[in-house]
Image (tube, rainbow, N blue to C red; front, side, top):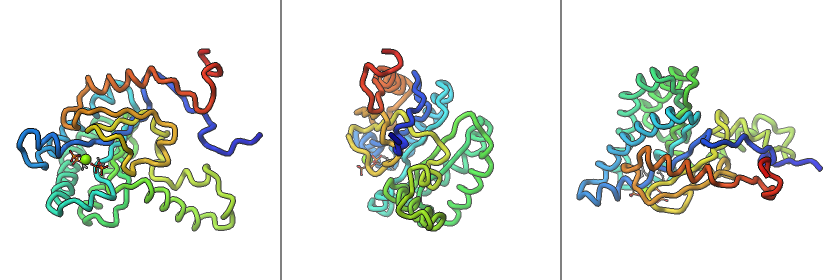
Length: 249
Ligand code: IPE
Ligand code: IPE
Ligand code: MG
């Protein structure tokens, strides 16, 4: 029997995830609880991301992908959207040297067409500067949507291999997806208490272990990360097989 699903190729599993994907949610509520404006939560959230990057390096997690701005977040008040864009641009300016010095390879995924040209310029420069680094691949999803990603990949594939239309495989599509540079995430964490994917990595999360915490993003720290990793360690990842078929059985 020929298996055509990529999920049949069982990935390497281990005690620590090799690719952690995070929805950094709850900044606004964190701020509200403290009678602060929402933007104070976003500001604090950047610090939390900085600590998480360090913690991932310390735990030898090779890939960290974070959701910074969804394709739906344009629906927010214009002041909040422009604050987030400026925060992103400012953080890129401030941190790119540090990221590079620490051996981090930076990737930005998402639709760039709505971004200010100055932001696009910084993204392109930051990616070029860090492209050869291998210690940690940090992917920031900005104006990203999982449906957008699948569609842009299909559209590009249709131009590249029109003769194979009707017979494309998962392997044909893979190189056109935004996350082609990384293995599929094996642990997903969403902070802020919501139990949903919110159009994050739809294709790539097919067999990911999902973990939800009530903690707001600005409160997420190494202790909470280790709790998530500990839960991950105790999950039985079967990929369709029975328990008895697993290597340890
Ligand atoms: C996540 O925090 C950050 C972004 C979506 C940019 P929120 O801003 O969604 O915070 P809550 O969910 O309103 O608390
Ligand atoms: C998801 O958070 C997007 C990011 C964290 C960037 P939201 O707070 O926008 O998600 P929903 O809309 O409440 O599901
Ligand atoms: Mg939210």
